Length: 144
Image (cartoon, rainbow, N blue to C red):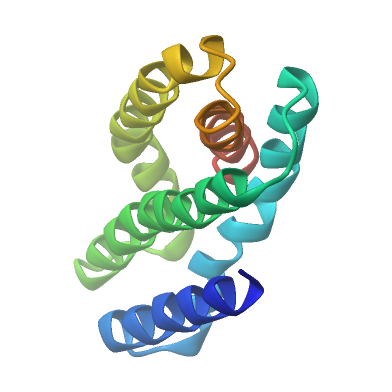
């Protein structure tokens, strides 16, 4: 499972490097991954779910979703900077304009997996708790 996580992180890194063409921006986006991990662990603790295969699959999915959220912000910042805005103004505008769609999609995903958490299924509840709490935690820590 650790090999799968490593491969997925390398694939994300390479894909981002192709997209952004700058290692600094890729590293900024990749920073969102470790910031989501405490939320994933908290989700397992709150729901008293074990860390097993499906929780690990939830972690991999969580990585992809939080990276997508960071890409949205960084891409918007780059767009504004190409238009001549300074970095600070571009970052502020990205937060103002993109935070609401990110919040809505994150909360929709978290709410969407809530029935899986409530089912207390040994198969689906760990995956859902990692996703729901990890996404919520990530949104709060990454975008303040």
